[in-house]
Image 1: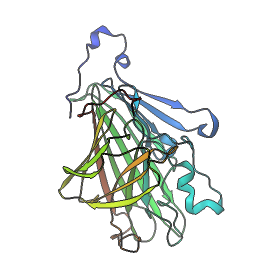
Image 2: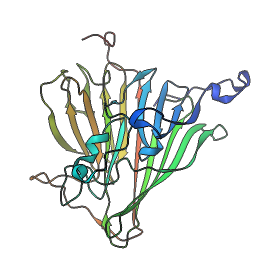
Image 3: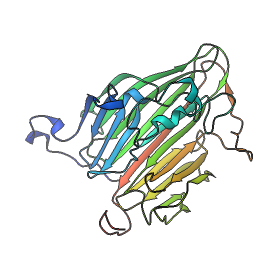
Length: 320
């Protein structure tokens, strides 16, 4: 991780000259009304957190270049009609992070929709801002979302996101608690989505030093089916190197022991997904069993993300 920059605060009228979190509301088309927090670390890393979409990370740019995958759906809420319930995730899929769970992940099964019932649930913002007085000054936000249905699932997500001021990293900490009347499993899949120029010809994906994909050749003719990889250490390290940057994902494998990869690099799609997840998959494609927790039981998931200049040389971003 690069050491955060320091700033001469006495030379500015307001510390937001250097770094800030600003609360905005999107106003156009299907995105209208989505409450959003715009983070600018002052260290080259900027990102948006969409409170109106489960406090997921919608955009992530490095030195002015967008790395997160932006889909034609935009930052909208999903369609809610009963006919499309199984595939509601697909109607709003996009952005740097879509959190999946907590009653289900992966393909629809047993009446549960693709990637579960939690994605895109509006959250309640509890706190946000800049903490210049901390021993390590930081930007932060914290919020809560309830995913609940009477007679069915019931979960509370408490999320905190932090980014060091002057830095090039961010951390995400989730606590998911069973709040229904019945015991329930907690399943989680963190659907990180990267697009061009992060994913282009020559991009590589490594897990704990082993190359899992790449060098990629883009575009491709077909969707590449999801592949599942067990973590091999207590702290997983997944590194993605592309034309624009290197992104490293770090997480504890006690709660997230698997990494799933999926990509659609066909013309007009151009997405690569990095997906730390809590459970594996059986040979027939169904989810492996997940431990059942009593009401009040919880799981904590933590993921750290570092962004740096690309380790390999490349031509200009527009080069083939």
